[in-house]
Length: 278
Image 1 (tube, rainbow, N blue to C red):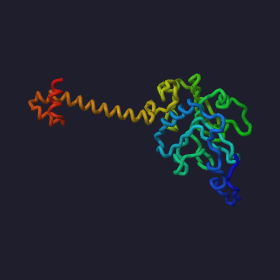
Image 2: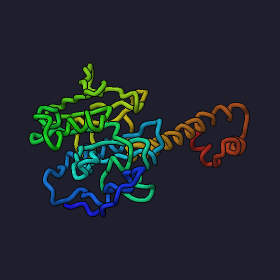
Image 3: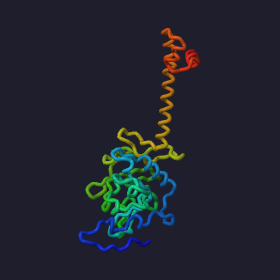
């Protein structure tokens, strides 16, 4: 696909990349005609990562997450891109220029690199995801882009076939694999941790990657959070009702009439009579 942005003559001082280089409108985005589209597991796992990614040091409208969305990284080769299974950028607007969904993520337009990238191993991409393919070619490998060009601080690889989690931190200009004593790890820059959670998501029980908070609690999805709020509200009602029931005989023993107890507790006379006998 050719770049449609017209040639703009450079000036002195030079024009900014936002003026002269192709934008996300000029570069191709995800296409159903392209090979390597995600399977159902990749979609669900990415969805769970997105739903639980809530770094507390950033407002929700300054967090961008994406899965299988083209990531353009080289101003000298604007057609080159990688497509992480999942990645997150913090400190950028959730919407492109505060107004619409992104077609792709273009580094020279956005000006902010991803802070974390996740690859879900598949037989066809395993070697490249783990940096085991020959490097130094053109275009560069996925590993080279994440490590040396974009310098993404955290790179996470999960093998769903073996449930093996590998985490790489950028130290200097190289990734170093972290030794895990358990299948989870705290990422201090994000003030979040990520690990393997065994549970039911979308009706499938297995090991899933998901984020956890500083207290070690798995961050709930919006659906789970709504359910927790509903259960908490129901529990509060039950506790209040139990307290009223327990207060009835005590107040009656103090000499209050049934009508007085009902008024004091905000109940009907019928409720006082019924609960007082239970």
